[in-house]
Amino acid sequence: MIRETDHALPRLAAAAIAALCLAALAGCIPNDGPAMRPGEDCISCHGGSTGTTTGGRGGHHASPAWSVAGTVFQASDLASGYEGAEVQITDANGWTFSMRTNEAGNFYSAESPTFPLHVCINANGAVTCQQSAITSGQGGCNSCHSARGSVGAPLSVH
Amino acid sequence: MPCLAIDRRLIGLAVALLLAPRLAEACVFLEDQVADGAAAETTTTSAATAVAPPAAPPAPLTAQQLDFDLLEKPPAGIQVDLAAVNRRRTMLNVHQAVGLGMFAVALANTIVGQLNYSDRFANGPSSGKYELTHTLTASATLLAFAGTGLLALLAPTPIPKEGSGIDRLTVHKISMATAAAGMLAETVLGIYTAKREGHLNQPDFAAAHLAIGYVTFAAISLGVGVIVF
Image 1 (spheres, chains in turn blue, red):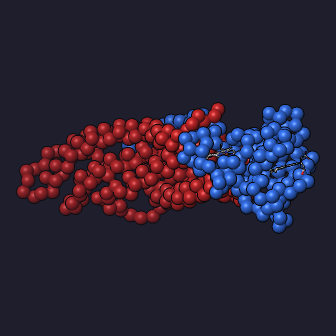
Image 2: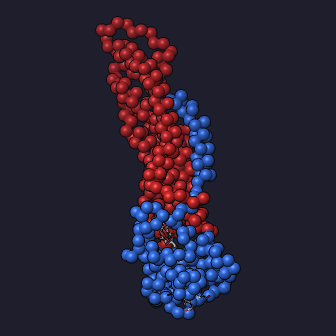
């Protein structure tokens, strides 16, 4: 019986080292993930029923539906996303939740708030809010907040 | 580093690559077994003749022939299916090789799983850069765990186990049964957590998945350790 387990310990050590190496070289940022296409109109693809299944991967993956999504940039450098801003949503029923922007400045939610919404952005304690309400179908913030959109500039904070 | 157009076929390839060295190792084991098995076969014939009364006096057993511990001094009159004994030996040796490989992949999976959790939910950047790797290592762990578990469960038991009580093998079995339950829970919970993308309660599911993951890996470690040390 003992004979069989004689080689087990060195093998186990080798296996553990191999595992650590594998873990060390892990990691690549997906094309279609949380940091994708900052500044673009997310909802044009992530619109649920109207959501397309196109993307960077041959078009057979469905993109999940977001109710609200967009990107916050740095006011000093409109090419760089602002990480760590809180995008606060208050829905028609008074329900509030917030999303934190990631390193691309992106934020998104799959929750189902009741429109119209009121939105504010809290960046390091400095809060800016949109005066008008966001009505149904307007959850894609970048559709207006971009150089080509009706606002003419992306969402940005200092 | 961006993932350039990663295809599902590449995932399959990577899983195969991860398992290939383990299988190769298992094959080496098999060769050993063929040699061992041949030696055991010789013992078999002598032992069988020894029991049958009208046969000629048995040839004296050499030390080498006796190097087959499961068959040492079988009580006279008990029939042992030697083919089954050999099959059991082979299956359990492959079980051990694949099991050690599974432990390595499970360790990698636990590390990558923690990295993935930290990336996605620890208030820092949320790039998703470990998601694919975690999917790969998790699939490989599950595959290897199921494979090595089946080998052990399906191995024939020609010689009934004597005695009872808590010995190493009992601890091994309890640990691995716990790990199996953990793996099942992790698979369901992991897939569900990924589906909760964009939902406010996703971090809660992720935290549960992380905790059960550590418990599962602890169970695997205990099960492996109790045999190896």
